[in-house]
Image (spheres, chains in turn green, red):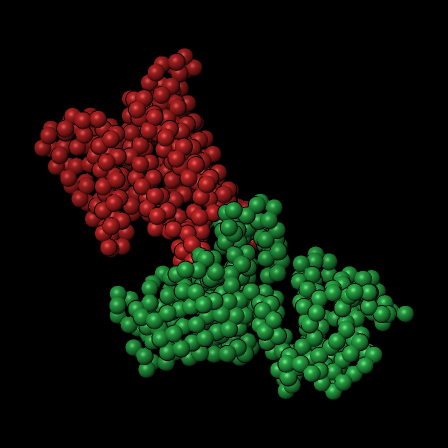
Length: 342
Length: 267
């Protein structure tokens, strides 16, 4: 008999197997065992390709997380039919001891009409505060240089872990907004609060910044050096190497670690820049026209990586772009800066 | 030849050439990466002005040229125009003023030429002490601030976003460059500063894939050039600065040719 079909280990709420070997167990409640499983899988150097799980209760949120974690077979003590449908639609084999129409909890109500796995997953991570991203609130903000206003924001709020595309015509103030967020220039009026704190009171490494990559330069700087510049000086050498290794692996550029950064393709450079921000443990990422100067293949890879970031750490992301294809493929919320403000 | 090393002017020059061989290329990396080539020219001219001023006033050369260079650097940093424009203006002004001083105060031509070609065998113990202090400062600054320096070299706005005090570090590096150029003038003269400041870096750039390697190789090449130049000078009784410059260019050509053959084979 497959082990995932056997009763749960006493005192546990989730048991996970790979090829019938127990690899993970948890005794937490609600969806936390699944988040713990996600952390375990992300930090494990072993690739598990045949996951099966036994969970106590399965609602739609649990089902979405199981799908994202590529669990192939699952056994629930109690499952909602909505969850079962979602699993069936995504080719996950689900068995159960008992079923009900719908779990009686707020989480289940939240996703009653939602069938996109990605959307359910992102929303539940934010709800469970499992994302590293911090909330941002821009209130009655006027940005500009030398007291000359360029743009006014009435109110703009981004929840922790959410992603927002900002678009607008050339010269409208997008770069000024970036400089204001990076504290290079001070706002003329208004406030920017990150996690309810004024922006100038933040830890300097809270915001990670990725610029558009222009031409190559005749200067040697290794990928390892680019990534490690973001790491705190106080971190031990062992932890530093671990952070560099993990972030480069997550961005799938570990093989480039000893290469000269300026010898890389545009797409590779952007991945290394993302790895730098992961090393920095940035809670907010600002990407400025990241697909400029990228070829089609590099653009595709970057889109895949950005989507993967939304299922991993989930920093809050602000992406500034003119790229219509990028906007369509990411399908994030959009804020349009319009010329009525000057 | 080894007997010569027992003579004070020779062994002082020998110590100075080793220290400068190690430290000047480290400054050279900063000059190239921070795009301070125009500033370097302005400082070279500043050194000539300082030297002319010291000779005209019959004062010790080194402190005056250091002072003039620091003033030039501070003015360039503070004046709100691009560094290139400020450096060009500084170049013209300092040379013009130096020329005026040499003419007005009847500075002997031989003394003026020393400013251009250097006088490595006329170094004082004070000169050596200043050079030692500068070498240690540069090395320690690099060791303890390496990540910050790499971040500033990579991109100033990204460095700022990481909380690095970009302006403070930039100004510090500019001041170090000013001191380096001043000391280089004493050793190898204003005209051939690039032999120890820039050429070892250009050679090392062709062989490096990381900034750390660049700094190390630049310093090693600097040491190789300065030592080989010094020994050749002693053996063949040639001028030091010219010898170092010729050897430096020779090695640069060899490395460039080797690199282009390697690139062609790869493609």
